Length: 345
Ligand SMILES: Cc1ncc(COP(=O)(O)O)c(C=O)c1O
Image 1 (cartoon, rainbow, N blue to C red):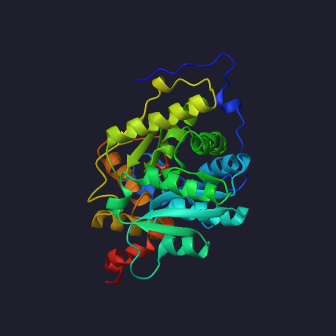
Image 2: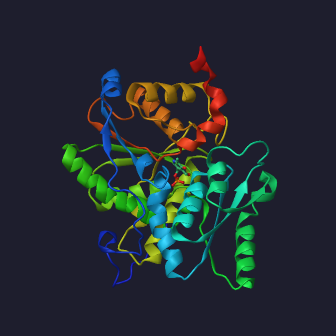
Image 3: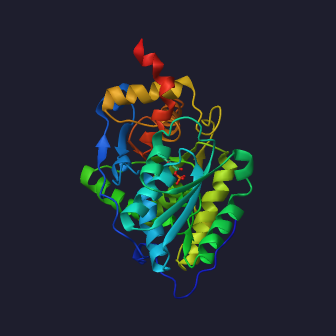
């Protein structure tokens, strides 16, 4: 593992104040799940309702984009370019926030938009984003070049475009969930709990990176677990570490990246990214009817299902409190409506 050098005038992350816009509705609720907890008969389950951060249910992305878009504005950019899958929650959140801030938004989306616009893609269009779509083979491996080519295009027009990487997961985006831990510290004190485990879906690593650093900085004494929804544990260990490294170096923070324990729960990707099994759809339906919380099949449904399975296998012990971070994504449900046909029976 890499050891970071720390400048002598470096700041503690909790005392550092990067540029930030106030866009999210914070604090989000920390909700106890009484029926599920009773059914499990073990640890008490809580959900941090970050599906309710605001800006059209923008989920975890809103926390990161408060910092990313502040940086774009500080650099004098009038345009934001970002990328993701056709149903990317991150791209939809960015498009809506750009509309709110009067910035031009340009999305490079992976996928084939045949048929009616649905879910996040429909919202991207409503938000007035400029959209280019690329089939997977033209996107994979080429996306960094495509982003730079479009940035150059705007420069040629006398404009200034800011590139946000996939999921806003980089050293800037880490602040989102680092600061969320400041909020969790207060949530836990108010609820009088000391959870041993905090669990989230991990897709581009930034949420997990922020939670990992924040849990340590704010003494949450909890293990942070990311459930990967694509790739594998090794990929996410590297990615989370790279985001933390970028964060530490960019802001010259007193933070020891090498000593972070990065925990990934692998084995729940199923057939692939955005593809779920019948158990996941069933889990989504059960939680909605049992507790009134709606998960999505791409991220939170897989992560929540993984949490339940791992609990059964004893990973989290038989007592205490577990916090699941609900990172949003509800619009990803609708393009997959056919998988809920079992509810009609
Ligand atoms: C709803 C939802 N949950 C979780 C994640 C994963 O967050 P991250 O990209 O920070 O790993 C994403 C995005 O990738 C998301 O859209």
